[in-house]
Image (tube, rainbow, N blue to C red; front, top):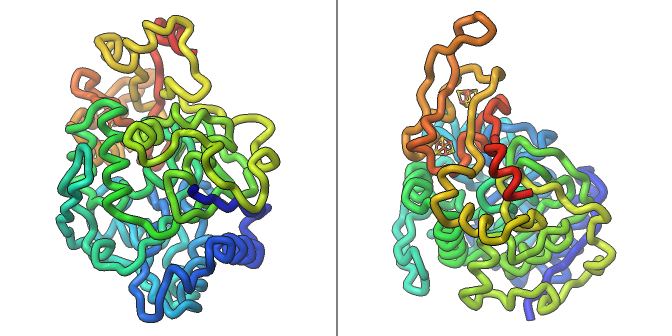
Length: 393
Ligand code: SF4
Ligand code: SF4
């Protein structure tokens, strides 16, 4: 039976975070059972885009720092690695590492920061959709991968946690290709589960001290959760995380795929939970879901219409559409991130003033919501047609 450990951690005080990480890792058998002296250990936080720790978008540096220390105590050599969304170049990567506090963690612990963007092709014969995966070479060459996701809602996958975080093990350009090719939530989720399994993380520790609800993963609302989750089984950890924030686990598309493929039993009751009991850890008020979610607690008033929204022609008519609002600075980040080149910067008239603004061509848009996720100015609104609002609450 998979085991997930839940520790309480009220805030990001480094001492408290380290104590929670130590408690969790000890409950899983100790870092010595995971890392051997001399092992190359990749720490994979969620570094979605350049954002300060307090914005709650990225895995907090206090969590990464505590894990780096434990790895070093076990004799391992930690390296902080991510391939964030957005432009795929070393200047952007440096900005992400510096802004998110990872450079400081590296300075204070002696952990390395990875700027190596080499790519390795990995055969994954057990994969259902993806049997050959392109991953960052540093992840493939590591002895141990420790996945450090952040608990947030997500426009495309309802929730982001362990499974979704390893999408960041894929180099930038390839990520955009997957978005372009796998246009349904189901296909995209199948790819995510294959990639998670191909990466074979040994340990997952989730920063759920402050999570993000509503329109996550970057423009949602911060929510104090006060917990740290750890497991050797990332899928089980995501199941527990979903349950404790009031999201039906199998309404999270990657978790539904994992259950369908027999990678989980599909029921939280089949997971052993230690530390804080699940009933006690569960939030009194559930997470607000993203507008784009059609599962979780968003139930269709008319089931058949909801199924059409998910899978059929209504998708094109009624799904949530992205559009730039007047906070847009025409910075071009979304233009570079859109996997199907559906965004251009155009001159528009705004209250009599001529302005440059991002314009989304909805005939090309595949609703991946990367523009919403990566806009540094919270300038991409996600709006549903009034008719869709009647169909999906
Ligand atoms: S919508 Fe956001 S990312 Fe796109 S150009 Fe405007 S400010 Fe930049
Ligand atoms: S316009 Fe936005 S939501 Fe549409 S495909 Fe491009 S990045 Fe994705």
